[in-house]
Amino acid sequence: MSLEELAGKIRSCTLCDLHKNRTNAVPGEGPEGSDIMLIGEAPGYHEDQEGRPFVGDAGDLLTDLLKRAGLERSDVFIGNVLKCRPPENRDPTEKEIETCSPYLEKQIRFLEPKLIVSLGRFAARLLTGRSVKVSDEHGELKDVEYAGWSCKLFVSYHPAAALYGADARRKLEEDFDRLGELIKDLDSFKTSKQTTF
Image (tube, rainbow, N blue to C red):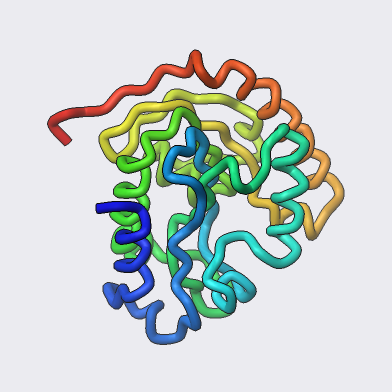
């Protein structure tokens, strides 16, 4: 199944109740050959309206942050843990994450990225399999195994956090400056696949 075929399944998904109130599902976007994935929490209002990840103010900030790291949006795959917007942008429930995460697993197995950037605690927790305190672990590069794929994980804040405080924005900018340095050695990042997955 290609990424676009998978996106079609996501757009028509009715596996949880979030589909009842969505305008659009948001499968994610980016090139099929991308070595870098950015994973956020869930679509917000603007994402739901457009069917695209990280649009609106948080999306503009993410675009600026990527430029700090020497990247364009077209260089990376951008997605979310959930593919549909929770009402009033509430936190995802455990059941919603459990129901929706197989889509992200398929995207990761298809792309086989060298590096995943988690944006916020929900993505970091899903990818590491444990609770992550982003304020303590942001800017760190970790080895992670998820969906039968082993690669590097870079932990950072969700860009929306920077819209509510200068301190979070400064930390995000520092993280993406560091990310820019790390990806200079991207070709040396080791990856592996579990053939039995």
